[in-house]
Image (cartoon, rainbow, N blue to C red):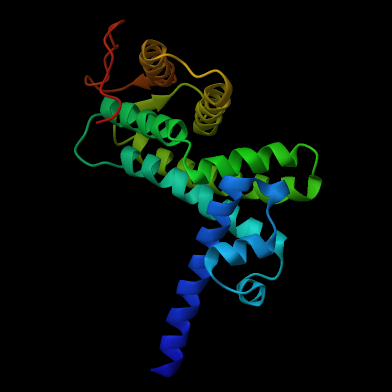
Length: 221
């Protein structure tokens, strides 16, 4: 019982450090965050932080993984939602991707900051690339597992569909930080993204019909 209790406490404190790191990095940025700052945010000593993570680099690697998994989870949930049409799945997945990015949640702020730092930091670029690749492969597996079931045939390889959509959405994040769209423009972006996404699939069933221009789908259902 004692060992199990210690294990549970260790897992809880590890998650506490991880969350403190995300919050601190989101607030101060990578360049201005030290292990001491993270320890203070977590209400622990620096030694406690190093007990769970060997170094700041090790902690950043786990932070990256946690951020990307958290950002990707709602997208997978929207895509895998049972009992909905292919159109609703596409709209739901795109809506989830946009909501996550438009919210500028701490996890997203951390990713944007770390990516900017990695432009001139090869050591930081490696774990970022690995974390992004891992999440993209997880999303790709979910996509491949359901497109045939939905009567959809990709007109380009599924991996390219993900790259294109994620690149567009990540670009929109940067624009939102410095030159945010108006509400009217946001509605137009929603519609355009849905048209683009649907244009990357051909239909093999009657349900997948063209979307009338000007008819905005419920992307945030």
